[in-house]
Length: 197
Image 1: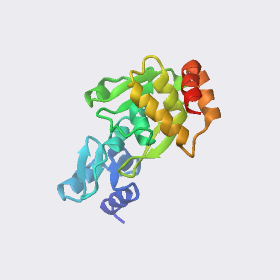
Image 2: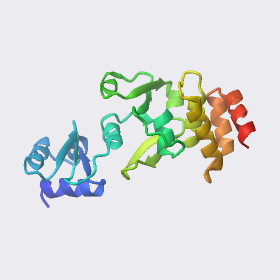
Image 3: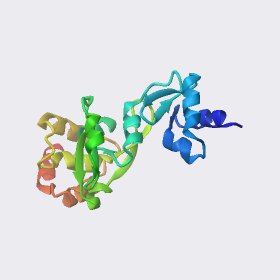
């Protein structure tokens, strides 16, 4: 099997998407990508991300492919977990404290930075509406994040999210309490849970 077939196969196995990094890691040259684009066998989605013709372009997977250290958080994570019905008009991503935010900000991403100890806390995977898997924070971590003083999340969104979470079959109240302790939002969490539980 030649490079062309291999790259197409990689894309098919990855929900119709392939990145320059994936192609190079598999031992093929960037020239193979250009050839496939010129022949119309793949289409450029954004810099470094290519999709098969007819594949729905999933912006969330594209952004995470470009900014691998970015974890979907805050209102974007609420949307991914179906804890809100508000579609984010701007994606929220959390990055490590020392990450250069210039490029993500150019892509209109609302960037949050946090200490390394908190960055890795509660990373999970969930499917986008396009069916692609992205990294996001778990429901419990996300709910604690939106209670933090600097979160700037609308109070109505917070209330709705907690109502949906309490009705959720996968809720994990002990984990929620643990995250609240680590993120120092125990009092605020208690206020919501006393009303809803």
